Image (tube, rainbow, N blue to C red; front, side):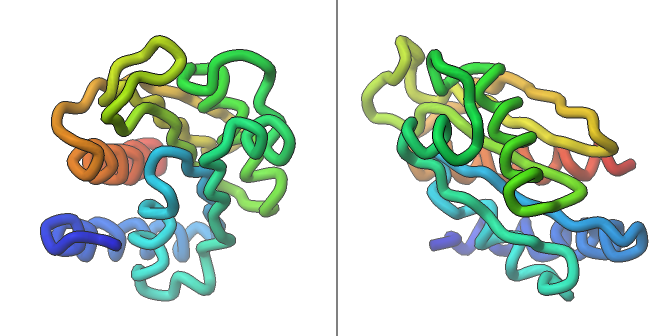
Length: 159
């Protein structure tokens, strides 16, 4: 569930993103791991979401990442996993633009990575890019920061 602070922040940013996507006739798909559907929920609240939001895949399990999204063998908290996830979700959901997040929300480490280690990825114009982030706080703060960051990265890529 989206908390009040994230909801207030997202209202304006998602409205801007929705306008850009609609103006360009683009659709979006999201692959989420640690955020468990939060990014999709935030985007689904945007104006006209039924026109530009294809859907989301909550790939919390490593097996789902590998089997459904085509993530290569190896650690799932990694650059290659984020890149494979974003390409895979755009393919599976037939979207023009993709977002992906994978990381460690905590409290325990995963893939030898500490909590707060997050990879975000965007796919725009056929080009996938991944970025490493280190967020502070507990699982809720890490997930909120991840959601904000991946939406901001998409804004930046769409110009």
